[in-house]
Image 1 (cartoon, helix red, strand yellow):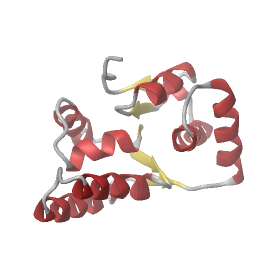
Image 2 (cartoon, helix red, strand yellow):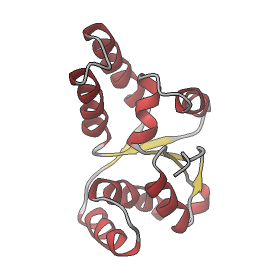
Image 3 (spheres, helix red, strand yellow):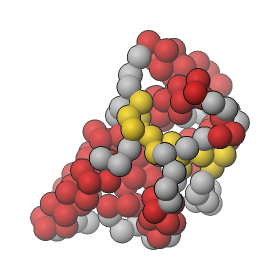
Image 4 (tube, rainbow, N blue to C red):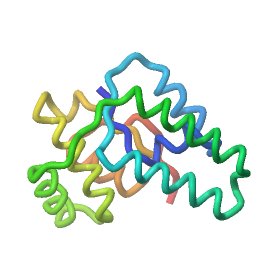
Length: 147
């Protein structure tokens, strides 16, 4: 199973070398995929920010949002719950991550209830979240950017 962070979803819909080619290869695998409940909002926010900053034309913005909807339809969604909230709070004490990354990690940890962390590959392009996921026992499915 793959758990995708928003940082890995964005390169699927907006060109972001060197991540786009790698994330597209991973997406092409027939693995079961899941995302956190907040992935749609986070990824849409990133596309809209790029458009506001002029990095995406109006046409590219529309294409990216359309691609995003298609891509997200291929994922199961880990819902928010009190257990996810508690795991996120606990993650903040253990790892130097931000609140939304703690929620992402907590959603990945929620999936562990169905198996082991080693059976879940966390797909992300965010160094801090990747390091926190690795510390929690997850495999990473993407090279992290250099510091």
